[in-house]
Length: 194
Image 1 (spheres, helix red, strand yellow):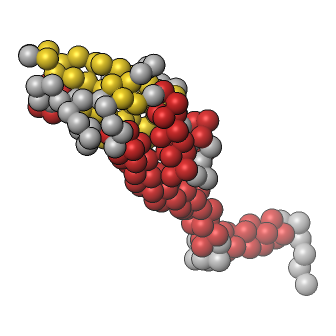
Image 2 (tube, rainbow, N blue to C red):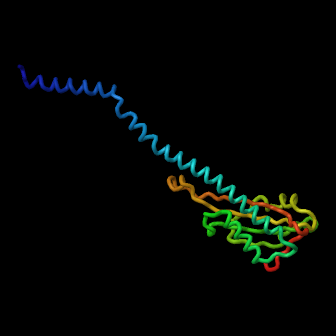
Image 3 (cartoon, helix red, strand yellow):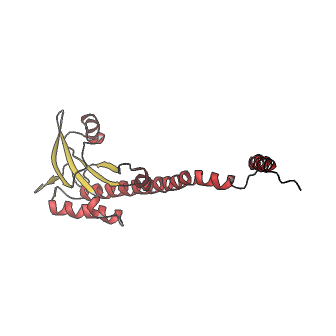
């Protein structure tokens, strides 16, 4: 047996090259690497689908809450009190449960036309939704109102943080709805202490 020192490095080098060549043909770890690369994307996709379905459900609840508040308000006769309006706002809280009522903002606004002018007669709110929605703009109110006939608008809004927002650091979403109705038991509806 010839074990000269010059033969050993050649044998080691040949073994290393054959192992390196066979490494390119192996597929044992490919699935693990693909899974590691796709796993974060799949988690974000799952959280995104949960956010979208929760957002759709929340939008529906906010719409029903706004509709209920304006419906209860417009069923009153000629005068409504601030205490009554507070009770109607509590109906929105019941509809939106199990969400906390602390994050729910409700606005009630009564508009009345006099000639070409549409003026706000009274307003009552718990919290404030912020900017004026398009439904409370002059053009839309001109279309909704008639002479000496009030229009009551209820606006419900809340914000929620999507699950994906926790991961990527986005701002909360604002969900809001505005519903308008005319008084049912008369043409006008006044508020005694608003």
